[in-house]
Length: 252
Length: 252
DNA sequence: TCTGTCGCTTGATCCAGGTCATATGAATCT
DNA sequence: AGATTCATATGACCTGGATCAAGCGACAGA
Image 1: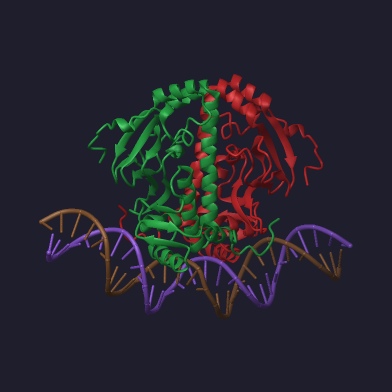
Image 2: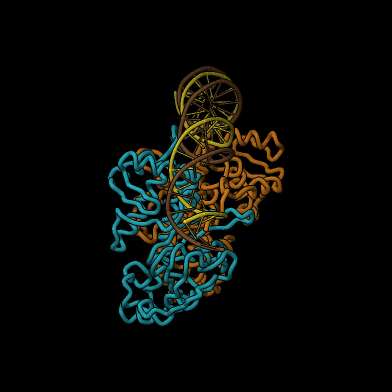
């Protein structure tokens, strides 16, 4: 279940200051000196394999985790065996932020492909942050950002059609990949159709049909997990359209 | 638009240390001394009236706001005039947390009834928090809590039926009122059916029908804004039921 | 007190998307 | 290579909830 072949690749053991993700991850805006102090507390990059858990629902919260390479999905399992996918996380993104309050993980995190994950013990981060105002500020911003993203997702699930949801999802992937210097129009999805549909609050069949429809309409090309976005502009138009359904009256 | 009759009720000018909300709001777990320092930076309780804005979408972010009495709705207005209601906020709840990152309010906040709101300038709070570790901790928790709540809402909107949504909404109100020492079974809703439906991602008509159905089934009594919950247990059952729709297969 | 407006309800239809059923084809195991 | 399994696709149908269309009662302004 856990990383069996812990080949501690030297390649993976890169300090924060040399990490290409430093502009996406925690160290944003820290001085070189501060980054070194941060570096001391980070447990670097243990490689996990498809299906491995980063943490599980119900576990005591000790650390935040940063995706260094690969991808992770977070999901809230329900007793009956079903689950709600809460998010997909790409390199530079931080997971576990929702567990700070209750000191228990309310969701689980599983890697979707072989991934390197940095562990940041939260109590140490907290200590450090009270000595480094800019780090404190950065953490506030990070948490706030997460809230903003959830809000957007609420809008998506509350008000948008299936078509708009899938388009929004693909554009979100595209933008995030671009930020990481990867192709925003040609990429592989590490998650299954099932996971996408669950995430978007749709049925698998609907997602599948939408992919083929988008392809027929010349918006993209799909072959299994491989996606090529052909008309980003058109997709933006789909997403922007009609933020609200059935809002025929004013509210006071 | 802003509070016209600023009758500075002495009653409202209660310092944090005497505020009955101290166990819900920021001061949780602070020493008396720390609370006094917090007290110094809080601009107390300006009374606003129904329809007044606490802040507007697009405004520069300067402060967090705490609902002291009354209630507030936050919503993301869309260019076309529609809006997505993001939340309803009761005494002791803090709004504006999503604006920290971008330093701009991404949503608007309007009071639903005459309300007293405390303003907490964020930069000062931030300064203070780097000197008071327990305050810093409290803010981390607060932000994290907000994320957790959004997550729950995602689950609601992504996977639950209309019936389950309304039941969850009513139970949430009930629990929050109880926490404030008010009746958890007998209360007035300060928001319109329209706002409720918007919040829950449903049509007004659906919400209306559900209210009458719940009443027919003996779950509650409604008369306009006045709600009396008669069977909390049954409502819990409705909410707990089937967290996931259409999840017929396993995900890897 | 009357009247217009607005918020809420209720009934009648419609349709997006869920559900069911059945392929088809990758990937994995033996 | 063949077999088993799982992911994706696609067609046929069904239904929860949206939409359309009246009514109706509360409350506000004259």
